[in-house]
Amino acid sequence: MKQIWIIPIIMCLLVATGCGRESQEGPKAKKNVLEKKQSQNLLKVDEKDALLKSKVLSATTLSLDLTSSVPIRGIQCTIEGTRITEIKTTARSAKLLANFNENTGIVILVSMSGEKIAPGAGSIAEVACDQAANALLTNVKITK
Image 1: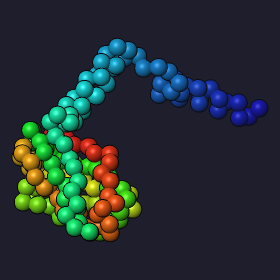
Image 2: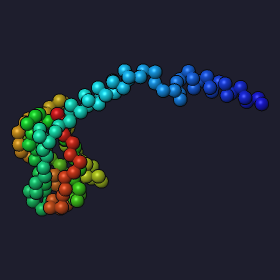
Image 3: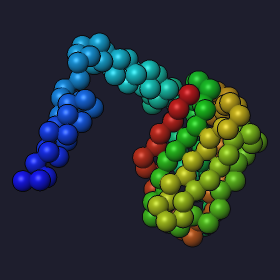
Image 4: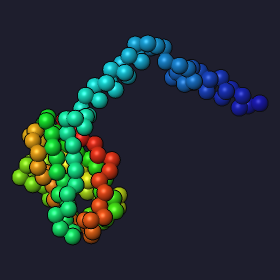
């Protein structure tokens, strides 16, 4: 009986914090969320604007080749079927940071200073790996 006083206090706290209650903002909140999603999609690049391909240079080296009609701010992709050991940028992407995760095969090229890869075609990175012929480029994400 002594601890029954706790229940009204908990109920008051739940009501005061809005827990268990739908947002009172209604359509305005939904509109803001939609606008935010649309603005995030503006950064994505369509295949007609940019295309990333891998090309075997040697038994243990791949080239990541980018063809784009717009400046590119960053790239993320996964290289499957081989183990990556090193990644190097090329003259075209020299001002970008390149890194990879050897466990997942995820590769990123991104600018920390606002630099972009100029529109055009050519290699943006060379990837050293165990078996280049087995490499498969997947999950490509390109942002402008």
